[in-house]
Length: 221
Image (cartoon, rainbow, N blue to C red; front, side, top):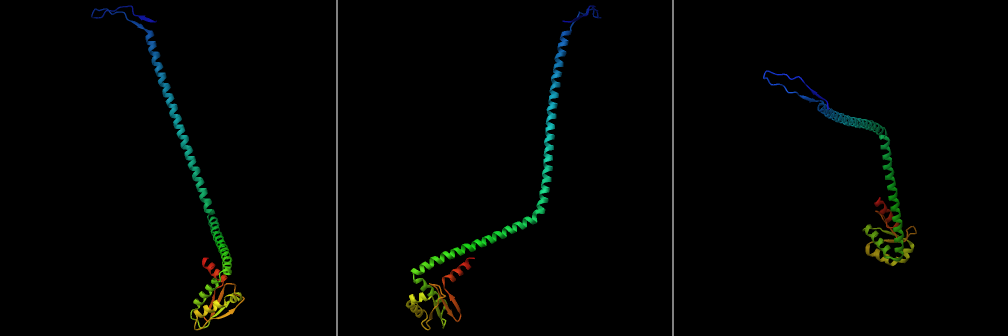
């Protein structure tokens, strides 16, 4: 331990001698070391904090830069896409128009095909029923005569085979519906089985199966 002692005593006006004082340099040295340690620790903290703040600022700057760059890229892409879309707009509109037209044509085609198929199936079914149910031709004859009304001259065209089979029933039907001027009944090979055609001076009433199905198909299209 280093100690400094002041040997010469001096008397002051009071007459009291001054006592010798010893200074311990080791204490001062330790205090200085402790102070320096605290200073170094504070300096280290300051440096670390500064580094952290610098890293944070750098990261924020990089993020901001990336964001700005991303926004710039997106803006450029948006402008390019908008420009390309403007240039492609007429072609796209034309393509859409073609698709719509093609769809309409396709729909019309298949609707017609479905209706034709339905009519073919119906014709096959009705023809089979006509061969087993003679009341069907008689019903069509009655409907034709009703449409003819009170026309003075009525000519009823029937398929020759139907006329041979249903002559008596048809004769009674015409006499009942037109007692004043019964219809003239004639065989006609152009008339399909089960059908009939009524002619008056006002027009023609065609009740053949094919004609009825054709009218039905026209109503459905």
